[in-house]
Image (tube, rainbow, N blue to C red; front, side):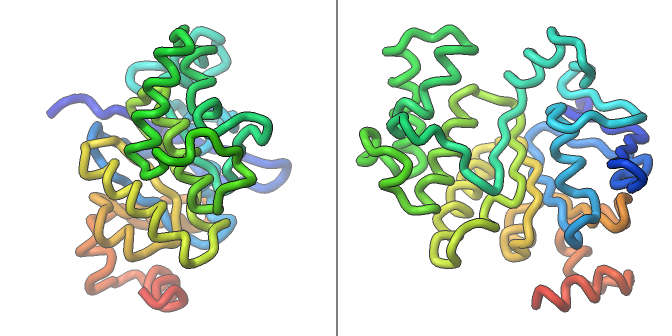
Length: 245
């Protein structure tokens, strides 16, 4: 067995008097799709944000592909090159075209020429079904299209792992499928993915593991067939019942 790509060891995080992560320990392997679920405020998005240092953990240790997650600028630069993230909101630059949004980071961070970065961006935008929208600005796109641009932008940095923080929660229902389809294609291609979502159909179909968060702890870590099967945890049964899963 190869070493885990990500190691989380006894990680805790507090916001003031509120503890949102309580000595969380887990590992994520290369090529794995891990889906994190749980009620709002359970700590799932906070864990995701600690993995690329958008939130600083108060105690414990996180290592991503051999990189210690801390405040060392060299570690942060290496970390941000390894980890791509897609948020609930698309966070695209409104004054840039779709092509420019995707090409910007590879030029600034990876040092690609404009031609190299735009060639990579065009290829990725074709991959997410937006080859005919390169010259448009974000306001000219639907929410689902903007989120697909955001996915292409994260992929442009050629990360080893992709983090998704409820990527469909801000979308109208008819736009959810187009984003999930792109994520399914990434998973089928072997991308390492950690996904916080309420889309139980995606979790059941694509996830290799389901991690259920409750009050800042991992209450269960199980393959989907066991998580969605004869569930013996009453808290999880109630959660799934609320979602109709």
